[in-house]
Length: 216
Image (cartoon, rainbow, N blue to C red; front, side, top):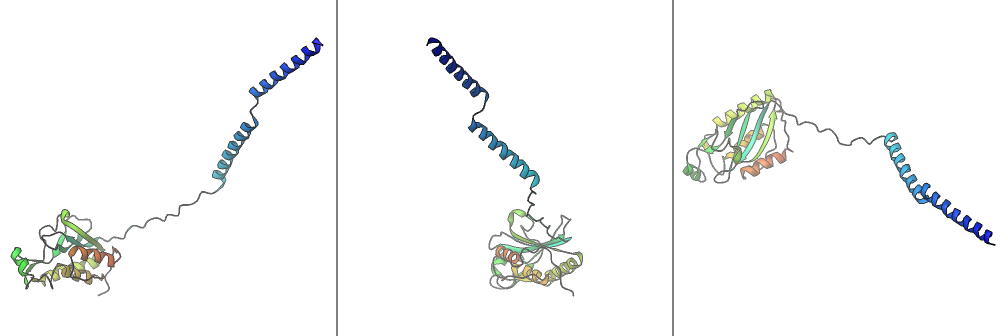
């Protein structure tokens, strides 16, 4: 009876020892399944990245804005009153610019009088036209050489034929509006603030940068 009990106890101890050894050397079923799922996911990701074609970018290359060697820049700047509209024009690769605009000649009195009648005008650069700190709006349009010659000649002719200034009739927005019209651009209502006029000019023409004149 005692031997049988000893043998049973020995078998039980051996069973516990074997279970402990298996627990230390064999991963659990749940751990094994988890490792298998990670391995399968990694394999799938690797297979997909190598076998599946990569999606091509849908972004289209941005076309560079077309530019010519010459330009006319319609500009507006601040002033003591409503502001002033004028143009820069010249060659794209040169720093020097020509300036054309219509202003009353003389001092403040000429400006005040110009709201009642016509006063002598100046058509070149005025104070602030070359200072970027005064700029409130601009719209630059490019030209090829042949068209630039025609436009620049027209500007010179317009300067020579604009001897008077009046706030309501022959003013700065009307002056640059004539240039824009000669170039074939859509021209907004002229009797408005210079900044609004230049912005409207740009908007009406869709920000168009290259202009080609019609045949003479």
